[in-house]
Length: 235
Image (cartoon, rainbow, N blue to C red):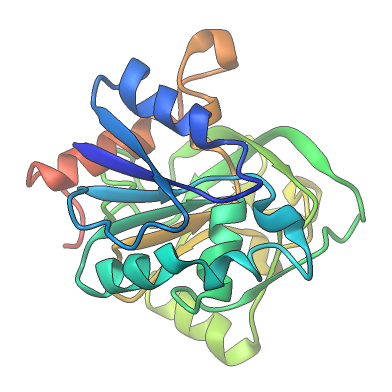
């Protein structure tokens, strides 16, 4: 697997993603500067977390106009795998590659903590190494992670299986107390109609080794490798 990691001015999790792919998983990873318009040589594109363009206006609002995003959009429409993590999720929303919007956390706090996620859909290129209903522990770090969509969009997401992750308690129940930011329906991650574009607020690249509080993030990367090798997802 060869992963391209887009670097915007203000990205700060690009190194984490490269370490996860290259040093932990043993696969190839390269940085893609935001002015680059060629992403076709990669098996997967990752939009990492951070504060692209300082989060001026709102998270991802300026980054979606970067030259690279036209190429990323074409890549996604062609079926290429695109993973947006935290600020990357916000960029995917702003670019229209995923529906909905991000608001300030309902507690008006920056939340940096471990969260429990219930795998709602295990038949995607990003979750095929998981069991449906499996509980993962993956950290968050954001102040604008309160996912919102109107009732019609929300119903379509739920009915079509496009909600991939949901915040939950350790028993798997999506309670208000387990929701760290107020996201509607405890949504922590969604995918597009084709299943090849995933946006998630939690950071899988930050839980790849036991020394970093756990290894559940490895399952996201294993899933992508499985898919690219013909072993899972998009069933």
